[in-house]
Length: 294
Ligand code: NDP
Image (cartoon, rainbow, N blue to C red; front, side):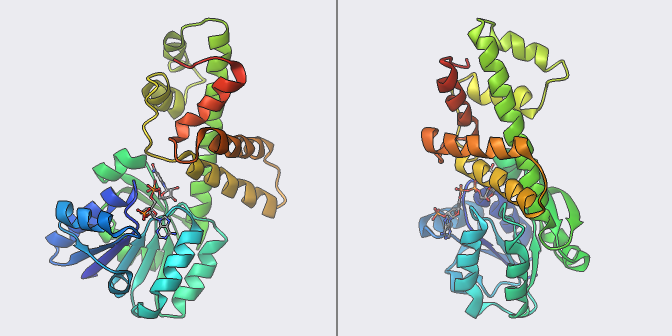
C-alpha cells in the first residue's frame, strides 16, 4: 500500500488521518486526504504532512479509509468515487455504519475489483489522537491481514465476523453507552431532587456495583463541570442506538430498553440539539425533573 487515502476529516478523521500520514511517511508512501469542505484537508496537509486531494485523486489510492457520519454519506461518496477506483485496492470504512449497508457496499466495490472491510472504531477523540482506537472488523480475514499493519490509528484490532459484523458490534456497544449514560442521569436526578451532593454520590457509586464509564469519566468530566465538550455528537449516538434497535426488529428480537432509550435520545437530539455533545442528553433529564446535575 504505497498510497493511502482518508475520506472525511471530522472529529475522528482528523487525528486518525494524522496517524496514517505519519505511518506513510515512515514507509516511503503518502497519505491523501479528502474532505467535503476542502479547507479541513488543506489544514490537515499543513499540520500533518498529508496531501490535500480531490475525491477523484483520492479514489485511485491503494488503501482508502473513510470515516463519515452514517452509511448514507458513505454511499454518496462511494458512488462519486466509483468511476476512479483502482482494481486491487481495499476500502476500509471506519464509519459507525449500518450492517445492512455493508454487503451492498462490499458488492458494489467488488464490481470494481476493490475489497471492503467494515471497521468502526471506539475510544473517542482521545484514543484517536493517541492512536489507540479499538477497531472492530467485519469481512474476510485475509483482507484484514493485508491491511492490519496500515491501521496506524489502532490499539486493538479484532475481527468480529463477516461483512457487517463490525457495524453490528459497534451499534450494540454504543447502545450500551446510551443506556448506561441515560440510567446514570436518571439516578443522579433522583439524588439531586433529594438534595444529595452529586460528587459524593458518584464517589460512592464508582466504588460500587452501579459504576460504568459514564459515572467514572463522562459525567464527572463533562456534566458536573457543565462543560459538555462536543467531541461526539448526540445525533450520532441516537443514530447508533437506532441501528441496534433496527437489528433487534429485523431479527424479531425483543430489546425494550434499547427501544425506549433510542426514543429518548431522538427526543434529546431535537430538544437539546443533535450537534451538542452526547452527554448533553442529560439536559433533557434535567428538564424532565427540574434539577441541574452539578
Ligand atoms: P463529525 O461530525 O465530526 O465529522 C463528520 C465528517 O463527515 C466531516 O468530515 C464532514 O465533512 C463529513 N461529511 C458529513 N456529511 C457529508 C457528506 N454528505 N458527504 C461527504 N462528507 C460528509 O463526525 P465524527 O468524526 O465525530 O464521526 C464520524 C463517524 O465516527 C460517525 O459514524 C461516528 O458515529 C463515529 N464515531 C465517532 C466518535 C467520536 O467520539 N466523535 C467515536 C467513535 C465513532 P465537512 O467537514 O464538510 O462537514
